[in-house]
Image (tube, rainbow, N blue to C red; front, side, top):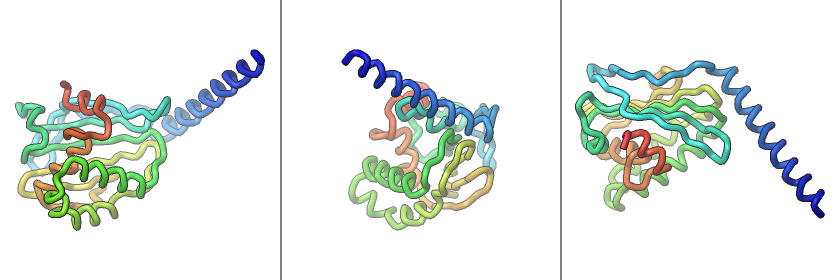
Length: 191
C-alpha cells in the first residue's frame, strides 16, 4: 500500500515536471526576453506602467500583464474616463473563443443589467477580435477618451470599439469590483 502512494506521488511530480518543461520550452522559443515598457505613448497620450503581475493556472504561467495610466493619475481612477492600457504576453496557448467567453462573462459581472444591454452589440463585435493565442503572443487594449478602445495583436491594430461605457466594462475585467483575479488586480493597480 505504501509503495502505491509513493508511485502515485512520483507520477504526479514527474507529469508536473514534464508539463513545466514543455511550457518553458515553448516560451523560450517564442520570446526569451520580454519586458513591459515603463512608459508608452499612444495617439498623443503618455501612459506610465502602474503595475504588473502574472496569471497562473495551478503551476502553469498563463500570461504576464501590465496596466498603464497617465502620469499623476491615481490608480483608484482606473475605471473613470481616462486613457488606459492593458498589455498581456501569453506563455501558453489559449483558444480565442474561450477568451471571448470569459471576457464577456467578466464584463457582465462588472456591469448592471442596463449597462450590459447598452453595449451588448459591441461585445458581439469584440468577440471577433479574439484570436487563438500561442506562447509569445501579445494582446493589448488601449482606451483613449473620445476615441475609443483599440485591440492590438502582436503590434497590429485588429479592431476598434467606441464608447467610454464599453471601455469601463472591458477594463473592469482586470481592475473592476469582480476582476478575473483579485490578486492580479492588486498587482496591476500597485495597491
